[in-house]
Amino acid sequence: MKGILIVVSGFAGAGKGTIMKNLMERYPGFSLSVSATSRLPREGEKEGVNYFFKTREEFEEMIERQEFLEHAEYVGNYYGTPKAFVEKKLSEGMNVLLEIEIQGAMQIKKSFQDALLIFIMPPSAGILRERLTKRGTESPEIIEKRLKRAVSESEGIENYDYIVINDEVDKCTEKLHNIILSAAMQPARQRKFIEEVRNDLKKMSS
Image (cartoon, rainbow, N blue to C red):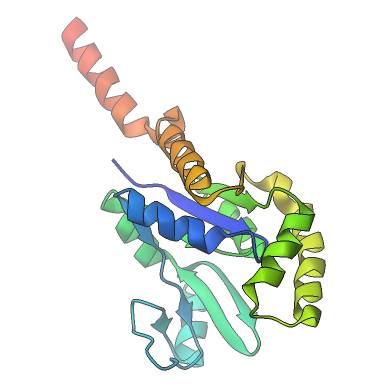
């Protein structure tokens, strides 16, 4: 059975990265999507693991050939999700996890209608601020910028298929897994199986 492309978004500090890591550790059949970028590799980063590293010219040629599910330019560098990698993993029966911001998620929904869009939410805005502060990795000014960005991001949440509230990591991971299992059983994702049974029934009744 073909896998599902699962697009996971959420505010900074909502815990989406932790949830995805936990999902992959607890359940088989999942693969992380590897993005392409035109920026140079950082120390320790590996080709095909962290990113597919491309020159700016190579990336623009891929854009021309429509080889991305979505792409954007950020701080002078391109980032994008290659179609070929995702489609290969899906054809192998793997569920592909893609962590991406809301604009990229909407691009993917247009070009890949079978994608499952899930938004990870904090239990409240106050808890989101608390989590950002407790990380201890950013200044108060950066935290305020992240919260302001969350205001604009919150305007598009209704376009997702599901929201999952991350009140506790293991519970949230289980909820996410159950949603994916349910989505896999939707008739729209079982067309091949339905057709096989329908044809067998026709043969038996003829």
